[in-house]
Amino acid sequence: MSDSTAVAADPGRLRARLADEGYVFLRGLLPAEAVAAARRGVVTELARGGWTDDQGRPAGERRAVNVRDALTDPAFRAALTSPGLNLLPYLPPFRRLIRSLLGAEAFSYPVKVLRAVYPERPPAITLGRYVHQDYQNSGVQDMLTTWLPLMDIPAEVGGLAVLPGSNLGPPVRPRLLRRHERGWVTADYRPGDVLIFHCMTAHAALPNRTSAMRLSTDCRWQRPDQTAPAEMVLGPARARSGQPVELFSRMFAGEKWWEPVPAGLTLRAREELAAAGAPPAPSRFFPLHPGWQGWQPPGGPLR
Ligand SMILES: O=C(O)CCC(=O)C(=O)O
Image 1 (cartoon, rainbow, N blue to C red):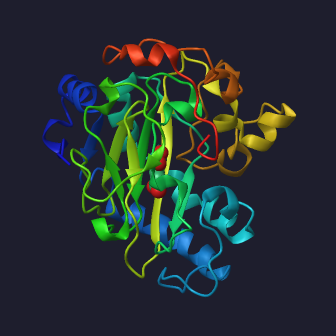
Image 2: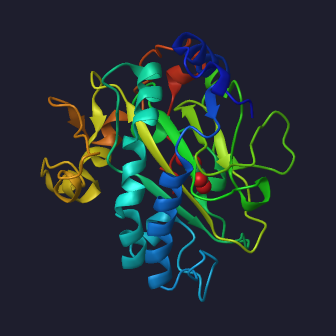
C-alpha cells in the first residue's frame, strides 16, 4: 500500500490519489497514545465479558463471528460505547485531513464499527472477508470509510486489503477474496495508521491466521449537503422509532472532543438511499463507470 504521508499537507495531491487509486493510507496520523487508550478501553470491556484475557487474546468460547451477532452481547456493546474508541474520529489531525478531502464541514457518522475478529476457522468466516464496496451500505456518493488498527496488525492477523483503481470500475459482486489475487494491496498496520477509502473502492479483510484477536475500528464520513443515512446518525433503533436524537449525543455531549453532526442535516433510511434502480449520483472525484447505471444493491447478509 503506498503511504501518502509525504503529500498529507497538499489537499490537491491527496484528492488526486484518492481519485486515481481509491484510497489514501497515512502512517502514524493519529497519536499512538490515543489509539492505545482506545484499545485499553475496548479490551477492558471484552475481558470483563469473557471474550479475551486482559491482554486482548481470545479466551473461552467464541462469542460471535460477525458484528451483527456481537452487538447482542453486553460486553461488546460496552466496548463499542467506550469513550476512548468514540473519541478517535474527533481527533483534530483526523478531522482536518478528511475535511481537506471532502470539504470544510464534512463530518463522521456517530455510528462506528468495532471489529473483534477471532482466528479464522472455516466455515465460520466473518463478512468483512467478502469483497465489497461500501456504497451499498449507505447510498451516499463520495462517502469515505476510514479503517483504524487498534493494535499491530501484520498481514497474517488479517488487516484490510483494497484493490487500487477499483473505484473507477463497475460494481463488484460480493465474493471471498482469494489467496494471492493479483492487484490487491495491504499493509502491516500499526496503531495510529489510518486507511481512507472511497465508497466505490473494492476491499476485503484478509484471514486471521494467528492465535490473536484482531481489533480494529472503522467509521464513515460525508459532506453535510448530502442526505445522510438515518441509521448511521441516529443508530438503527432510533431510526426505526423516528426519534431524531443523534446517537451518543446524550453520552458524550459534555465531552470537550464531541462535535454534533451539522445542524439542518437531512436524513433518510439507508435502504431508500441505496435503492434498487437508483444509480449513484456523480462523484466529485472521478467519472463514474457506466456499469453503475444499472446498479442493484446486493442481497443477502452483506446488505
Ligand atoms: O475490518 C473488516 O473486517 C472489514 C472492514 C470493512 O469491510 C469496512 O470497513 O467497510
